[in-house]
Length: 564
Image (cartoon, rainbow, N blue to C red; front, side, top):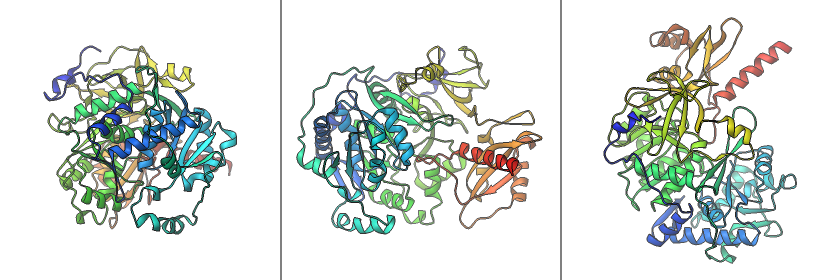
């Protein structure tokens, strides 16, 4: 598509094309440490780490990996929450020439075994608490070495001394790992390894920096191959979009997990690229997050709707100063308009929705943060260097303005493909366009709108119903904190609309009241026929509500009825 109407919407400060250097991703840490050696790179539960310390530790980690036989192209897994060791290991793996395999710490033995086997990872760094889970699957994978660290390794005195007691109270155990054989302690590595640069051959277009596994709804997760170019290009686009952000002066809120590509790019990579400070939160603890916002004064806060909802609905939100927040880019799920408006009122900053996928490193489309038009319900316009089209089912001819089709993307942030899956890679592209699997349309100004996932669309009595559209209406009801809508089997309609709802603390609403409310705000065929009230909804690690998990739940219930 040559016509790009969205470019006419760009504020003058945002270029249509962003230049980026063909250098290794880790070179940005080298530069930031050279330019701002004593500046704080990370704040973690009371402990500050300077850029000089960050850089030196990453080089030590790289040299130790080299001694273990890790070299160019070898995969090394990180199975950690947001903590300094996570960031140090990430850049250390890259300095050694390796490829990072991000692994969710919540994964079971079976899930970890699959990721290690599929990626062929030779080593992994993980928490002491997770050591038993990882060590149990070594024999069935190619893992040769486990590096073990602890939250207390980066806690200030006296928190580091008290941590084992807290650990035992919360988890019932204190894991002790000896430094021997294939088991290595992070603290010993930092004492023994040399902080020496490692010379590497480098191909900007081809060399992988990351294998990021997608939690696909069909089949096992696929390893998305992201190159140094993919990640640098997306981070450069992010910096161009946030053009008011100043190098070395911003503070990023790091509550999005780094094992999710969204947190990794918009917090870890972007912060290091611009020598900014990260405030790391190891888990979704909203009380801790509120305290850290109040004390550390973050200015930029990438997040997900459930994070903003959790903060807004915390009973103590009014006790903390959130006014330092200048801008928030929300991703991973649709941002309810009601949440956007309330969060902006509480903080005085901007909260805008963006759109992307693991396969696009991740951001491809976003709303303007500072100046520029804002349209209700839109995911925004394509980022610099990015082309987006709306394609019909079996063609690469762009559809007309306002027509619904599949959102397709081209740009330097689009993945190289799926790890060891050439057929699935081919199926995900059409004439150079990456097919997102999302249905949407573009308006006359170049703003894009997501209708829904192709697989999530509800078809009831022949009507196509967008779950997102129904959810937007439900979110406007003051009693609802979170909700998700899904299609469940129905013998008469084919599918029927069901709403799963979490109420705000102290609020109540009946099914009858919701039915009346929905009838006043949407066509009758879209109205949920069933409501289920829950204490919580199933979510991914980044806070995205798992609609498919609820659909699968309903299918199992239906199967059990048939067999009983």
